[in-house]
Image (cartoon, rainbow, N blue to C red):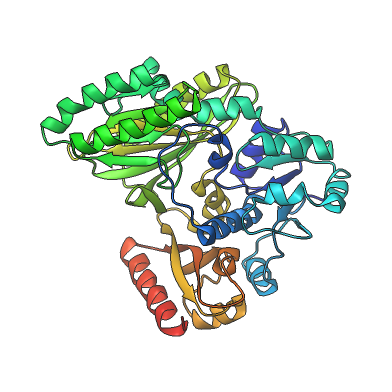
Amino acid sequence: MRSVMTGFTRRLRKALVGSPDAAVVLLGNFEVEEQWARGEHTLPRFSAAAGTAVVNRMDEFAMLLAAAGDHVVLKTAPDPAYVDYLRALGLELPTVHVVSQQDPQRTVTEDILRDNELLARLSTLDASIAVHGVSEVEEELAAATGLTLAAPSALVCKAVNSKVYSRRLADELGLRQPDGRACDTLEQLAAAVEWARGLLATGRRVVLKEAFGVSGKGIAVLDSERRLDRTYRMIADRVHRRGDERIAFVLEDWVDKASDLNYQFTVSRDGSVSFDFVKEAITENGVHKGHWMPADLSGAHVDQLTMCADLLGKRLAEDGYFGVVGVDALTDPAGGLYPVIEINARNNMSTYQVLLQERFLGVGRVAMARHYPLRLAEPLGFADAARLLDGLLLSGVGGSGLLVNNFATVNAGARAEGPFDGRLYGLLIADTAAEVAVIDAAVTARLAEGIPS
């Protein structure tokens, strides 16, 4: 018998599959943008193998988007003590399947495709596949298992996730966004560069974005004509060398902001749109670090975002998309709103927090989602981490403390010799922002003092 699902859990299944009680196989194939970006012209990227290993273990977030009758496939089995911790909080966990041999540099989807026994097991399930985002790799998985992919095609998902699409859609709908240009030809980019010179001459900065950049990758903030020209020449040289004239970049004014926002809505197969939430995003140098919830916004701002979500969602539905949509937005120092900075038509970090919010946050309470960078000399078990954080971990509904919502990322970068970097993800929950800050400082201090690096 299936467990009672939360409001969002039921709404999501209704949107993706058509039934609020449908069972799904969840996959956390984070940074699917890397698949979408293949074959595209990009800005210089500096690979970080350890960083990729940690990102790929964010697949464990999918456990907390599931209900008891669901299935989740992970790259490695979750720490048994961590599973016990989640169950002690009253969470009903899904059936977990683990790939036979994981490669830290591969996504969970790519690992599954190399595991014939697991593919055969999945093919027997009465469930649809629900993923973080859809690329051709996830379509290959659906074909290999015979299961239905509860999502639009990879072609549609890539198209609507392009920052060029996002910019042009906001223009079409008349939604406020930073002044800028969307470019899919070198000629358009050259014209945008000439336009940007005028902004740089007044002391402003401009930002150049790849169509499928994510997590601070594929973005360049430019503060001089020299850097602007050098970046343009680099792109033009690559285009000429490859003989592929297709490009996808956005060049925009770098506007002043008071706060970063992230709001989410869900588009159903029938085209209906449900506004899910808005949170204040915590960013550092363009990289997402976490969220404050609820966002400190006026009712008028929330109403405006709800209206924008409806407009965007209906237009996305017309283009064949259904599922979760996250939109980055910001407020300016004058109190104005830029409701569309970029559209992410896929799950977002905050998507995996909704079930926990509905269960543990409560009316009038405050939470901050964040991660703690760790430098470890050897793998850290959850039992040891819990002892280190004794008295600071959330113990149940109505309590205050840190709720760990991903532990796999702590040890994902472990290697045979030498120290490695990890991340501990969690939600800090309390009655006030000041109390959250106190807990945050205590967790930071305990981790710094108690873990030898």
